[in-house]
Image 1 (cartoon, rainbow, N blue to C red):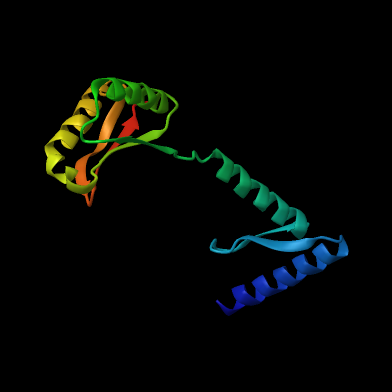
Image 2 (image 1 turned 30 degrees about the vertical axis):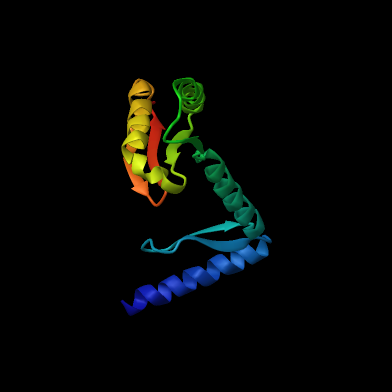
Length: 150
């Protein structure tokens, strides 16, 4: 085993001297490989290409947009239909939708009305969206989360 490490060291020295003689750098590409993989390249160009790849990967990741629609516990049929059309447009654009009913003051006693509104919305949108989170009361808001179908 002693011979291999001495041989590796002499090979590394040869590679370093060769890289310097042609004006490039010895760059370790894969340190975990056995033996480690090295290349003789321009180090600054190597860093530039790595940053470029990272930027491309970041650009390819999709950004999730969440749109919100607010209802009251006494939302009328016309207002509901108006907001339903907005919800359809948001979901068709590929955005997630957070629909919530906000209870002011003593309106919290109408929790069942709020839940009915959100469930009605989910039923109207069942062809273009699926429910991620069913209506859940959090403080003075009852939230529901919808995701568009592919």
